[in-house]
Structures are given as structure tokens and as C-alpha cells.
Length: 331
Image 1: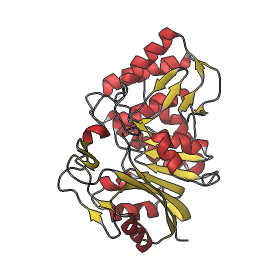
Image 2 (image 1 turned 135 degrees about the vertical axis):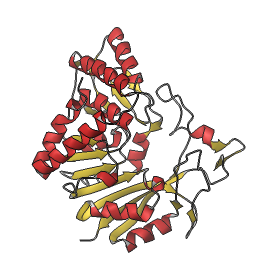
Image 3 (image 1 turned 60 degrees about the vertical axis):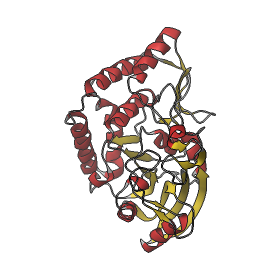
Image 4 (image 1 turned 30 degrees about the vertical axis):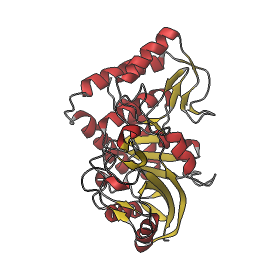
């Protein structure tokens, strides 16, 4: 299976929104990431995608792909027990599954994160994404992008440089078959210059991984239309003017560079030219929201907290708390 086929329809859709130059630029980026990566697992992943695509072609769908009442992305489908188990094994080849949940027929992909809980905390107005062109930065396997489409977005572009997430997106796309969701396996620093006019930009769980958080926020503004909506979700630290730079790791993560307080974060956004800056939610991450499952068998949040004091990380820092910030690019 040529895994780029899973993106072709979405890339064609981008031609209508951004013109052929943007579509050509993005197609080249996808081809380059998939076939020039040299990733040792790529042949195994591509074989799994071929199996998954075959299952999708022979699945009897009983309803419209989308988001069900339990906030699972997927499709109602009729699967035999044998077919369901074969599909399950192919999907497990793409382990670990971090973001979800997903459901295909009776097959439940119980991901590490209950990403539907985060979606509910974003606090979006019902019409916030209606007919919007949306960019989801660090989109993982695309769970929140599917939710954005369900909320009325005209086009969603998800970017994430992790090749496994691109494979997982292609697997789910085989069943969803939407031409309004485009995944680019790149980081924000490789965004084509032809893609800079989004009505809404989401940065969920990305800021603390950036060496320069202020530069990241500035990039987000450059990708927005004047008056466009920024939805930012990130780890924060308690206090007013507080700012934490971990000495080595935070909750066993090596690549955490900066945790600001909500006050500091709002000040940064104001200084960078955003307006209508507001804190939509603050939440302490629980071991029910982030945990090990059959679809993500590695250590998770429970192993990253102090066993004698779950309010602290294993390194002694305050346990993970996350804030959601809404802001508008100044017109």
C-alpha cells in the first residue's frame, strides 16, 4: 500500500481552500516524510496499513462516520468476530496509541489519554469553528482534528512530525474517508509559506516542549488571520508570576522546557499582540485521564508521580496541571 494515498483526497481539498501551490507544497512534504525517513519500523507499519485498508474496504458500514454519543471518533459497522480480531491485531501493530478514544464497530481503541475529556474542557462556543479553516499543531494521530470537523470546520490541517502518528491517522482515515482533514508529518518550523491564513489555530500540549515558548506563541499568531481564534492548552505552574524550568526531567519527560503560571502566559500573549485573552479552564491531570491500557502498555502518569505524595512529580515538582487559554489575534 502507498500510504500517501490516505492523504490524497484531503490534499486535493486544500487546493480549493489555499490554491494549487499550497497543495503541491504539502504533497511534497508528505512524500518526503514518508519515504525518505529511513525509519526502521516503516515497512512493518506500511504492511499493517495495507491490512487495515483491506479491512476497511470489506467492512459493512451501518451509519455515518463521525463522533458518537460517547465522544469516540469512528464508524458504526458490522464486523464478524474473526474480522474484528484481525483488524485489532493490525491496529495494535501501530502501538502505542496515545490519543483517542476510537471505535470501529464493536472494536474499541482505548488510548492512553481520554482526549475527549480535554476536548470538553476547551470550552468552545458552539459556532466557534463553523466553516473555519483550522490548524491543529502537534495533532498526534488526529483525534481532536476529527472533533473539530464535527464542530463544523470546513478544513482541518493537522501537523505532527512523529511518523507513527501519521500511520495511525492513515489507519483511522481508511474508515472515516474525509476529504476535509489533511495531516502533514512536519513540525511547525516546516509549515509552507503558502499556509498562513487560518481562522483558528490550536496548540494543545505543545508549548512546554518548545525551547523558546515566546517564539512559539509568536509563530501561532503569524499563522492566524486577523481576528482569528487561538486555543492554547499547556502545562502550567501555580502562582502569580511563577515560571518553572525543570533541571532535567519533569514527570519523567526529558523535553519539558518551561511551565509558566496562567498570569505569565496571559501577559506573554498580550505583549505579542493578542486580545480578548481569557483562561477558559484549569485542571489537574488525573490517573484516570492518562493511564496505561492494552493499546498503550508503557508507563503513564501513575509512574511519574511521587508514590508518597501524588501532588508532586517523581522529581519533586508540582504534579501536572493544565490550563486552556483563548485569545484573538489583534485585527
